[in-house]
Each structure stands twice: as structure tokens, then as C-alpha cells.
Length: 285
Image (cartoon, rainbow, N blue to C red; front, side, top):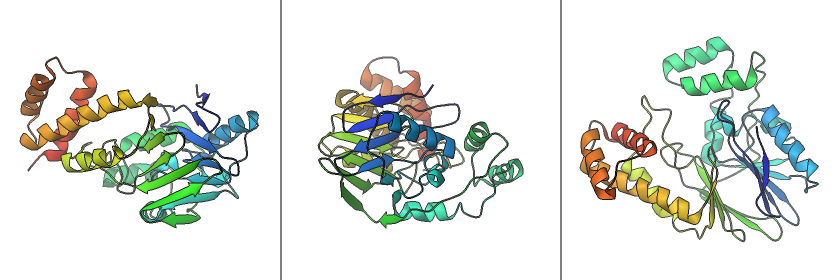
């Protein structure tokens, strides 16, 4: 069940749903504006979030920022009529490619067969929408290139286009006064490749960028809000595996042995999955 969580007077967020691939949605509440973070994977998803915010008698949203073009972050835009939508120029370009698509079973299956869509997303769309798939792609109102800072009144939000393996248009958001970093899906694997993968180069570059922010809390879109310390542990594991993957490209045994020796323990399931992603990302070098 989804829950609206109050982190502070300035930041509220709604928990994700794995089965239908609903990501975390956020609301940054300023003295003059409320900014939503991502529009959700359906009108139903976005509407539920708006209803929960309204129950808390919060300032109505006037803006929504999109972290990237993937369906689960943008399909709720039609319900946000009158709300200014903000995205990177690259995100708008990605969304424009979706405009001519049909979303019935046959169309989804055809795009999966062609490698345009992935089976995981096609099934999540079926779960979220059932048989009624009147999906409308609403393009963003305002776009930016590299970064944009919003003054919401008492709180500033920095939007930065950082890219990454998961989505080349990925945007992160930093709430300056709250010291919260909203990752979106930036640090996740590329799911649209033939095999789910991460590359050492992009991962290490992105980790360097993220470390420039003085964040005390970090939000993973399909996970949870974690402390600075917990995030540092995640980043250390990513950095180590990415670095070792450069030494043993495509070699799962070599990467696994080297990493296990470095941490001096048996590796866990999450680390095994990350190693597989990096093996896929360095195969054939």
C-alpha cells in the first residue's frame, strides 16, 4: 500500500509500488510554490498523490519536474492540467518519440519483439492500466539544458542533467536548504539494452558528480530515502565493483573473486546483481 510520508514541512513523498512499477513521487513545499517531482506512471497514480497532498492542506502544486522520459515517471501528466511541467531538453526529445505509439497488447508485444520496449515495462503497464489504456503523452512546458534553479520561497531546488546508464536524459534534484538529493533513476542499470547493464565509465563519472552535493538524505525513486551514511556505503560498493570491472572486463569470476577479497567476506545478493550488470556492460571489450 502506498503511504504519504512527511519528511519535513518542506518535503513530502509517496512510497513506491513494485508490482506496477510506481516510483516515489515527491512534493517540495515552498512559501510561494509547491513543486512535484515526477508525474507518476498513470493518471490514477498522480491523482492519488494529489489527493493525499490535499488531505494535508498543503499548497497546491504549480510546477512538476520530470527526472527522465521513462513511462513510469511521465504518464500521469494529463491530470496535472495547469501545472507547469519542467524537463531537460533531452527528456522532451525522449517523450516526443512516444507520442505516435499505441499501447494495446499487440502494439506493446510488437515493440518488445523489436527491442524498442522491454517486457518488464510492458507487463507493468498491463498491471497498472488493465485493458483500458487511454494513454496520452503530454510534453513538458519548460525545458532546460544543463541545470536550473527554482526558488519556491524559503527553499531552493537545483535541477541538474547528469545522464547515466539508465537514461541519458536523467536529471537529479537537490533541495538546498533541506540537504536532500533526489536521485530519480540516475544510478540504476540500463534496462533497454539486450541485457541489463552498467558501465564503469558512466558509473564512476556519475558518482563523482553526486559527491559534489552536500546531501544528508538521498531518495532512490524505486527504493527509499536513505541516510548520507547508507548512501556512502552504496556508492563505495558501486565504485569498487566498477573499478574492478575495468580490470576484468566481462569476467564474472575475476570480478567476483577480486571484490570478495577486497571486502573480505562473502558477497551478498545485491552485490552479485551489480557484478552481473557490470559484466554485461563490459562484455566484449
